Amino acid sequence: MHDNLVSKPTPEKALEVQRELMSAMAVGDRQAFEQLYRLTSPRLFAVALRMLRRHAWAEEVLHDSYITAWNRAASYNPALSSPMTWLTHIVRNRAIDWMRGSDNQLDALDDDVIHSDASDDDEPLQRLQQDSDAKILAACLAHLPAEQRQSLILAYYQGLSHGEVSSHLQQPLGTIKSWIRRALDHLKSCVGL
Image (cartoon, rainbow, N blue to C red; front, side):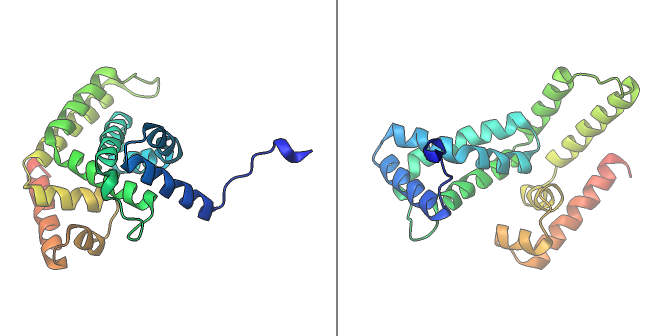
């Protein structure tokens, strides 16, 4: 009676399938790539979206990440990490690179203003002020040195502790704290607080 029910694969079976797909992808198997994409893209999109907080940015980063995965599949080593860990690492790095690009941030803010639908709850003047504040903040972030901007984004947008930022960027904890403090000082003076 229950023959038609499809059971969810065990984590061990899912890992085995992902490793087989990575091996096939490494030799140019497009069907394996497509299947791996179907299996992993929802979770990886969630990672990108959580980091970038903008649907369009997350889609772009995910697309770039899979191109990178396709091109580097031969370098994947199953002894070092699971396919999902390897792919997540690519997505995280692409998302961080995306956040570093101030042009992306400013263009997206402009696109959001143009394409956003005003809700009945928003007052037009309040909405205009919020959009203006976001542009000012984006411009201020763009003037930060890359290491300060990245540290600040990881700490305040991604919720990483100073210690986690230190580990992620492979910099001493004191340096990270200094970069974040300087970035916050700059932002305060830039936005006029």
